[in-house]
Image 1 (tube, chains in turn green, red):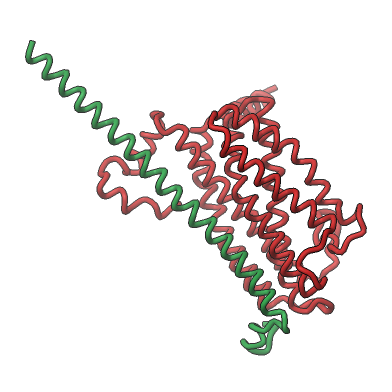
Image 2 (cartoon, chains in turn red, orange):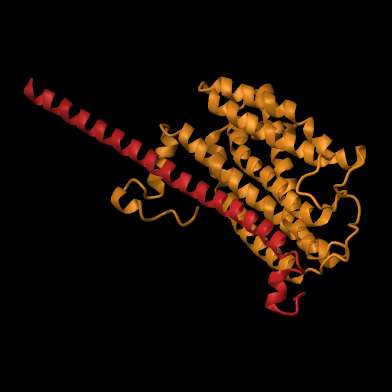
Length: 73
Length: 268
């Protein structure tokens, strides 16, 4: 470790504010990019799943009405 | 001749969204894991173990986030320019997906590079902002990103949007060499490159090794983000195709929809 104590580490030789603001903003950017992409991926997958399921349900009910039509005639 | 054919086949596959989705599945995990490892190591090293600069003191530690952010921001723009060129010449659809995926991260990283540059400039140059070749050309890069973003939001037609953003991305790449050589062309405050591919760094090894780790970490992070976003866009655009349905079925997301919502997200 370059610093003698934790307090020294936080102070960064009077440049603490600058260093921590720069690193904090970097972490904020990286973490928010990661979590935004992850939540987008979840919602996209949920939407696609929903679309496929409703299409399948539609097809199933379509097939059913066809069968009913067949029995009637 | 055989190699030529192989290359041709590869080139055609490259345009196939399904093929792209399949081969990148493992890449995303690889880039994500590498990014985490490199960034954690790099951050701890840069903050606590690297020695302070004899002139700048500890404010020089800002370099470890400022330089990678700026490098990746420019690389992403170059990626957009290359994708734009391929898209314009060969009409490959995947290139527009790539542009859309590079754009948001490139934009925030450019902003981050400018911001951390200002925070570094205050204790070093004595001001938050200098009208200097490097800072102005980087500001132009930010405006290019914002412009292309706005363009894409404004054009609803997918083909027109793809062509317009490809063209602007391609034309905007002239700014990249300007950013690179700005410190040589104009007499500026901004210090010259800390790193180059051909020369040994002027810094001692205990200073540049953490920088190298941070740069690699940022690149892996960008790889993870860009690929993830491209895959999302591919899924969205192909959502009505059979392979997407099969993919979802394969993941068990359709077999039991009630259960699927709580599982299968761990790997992204």
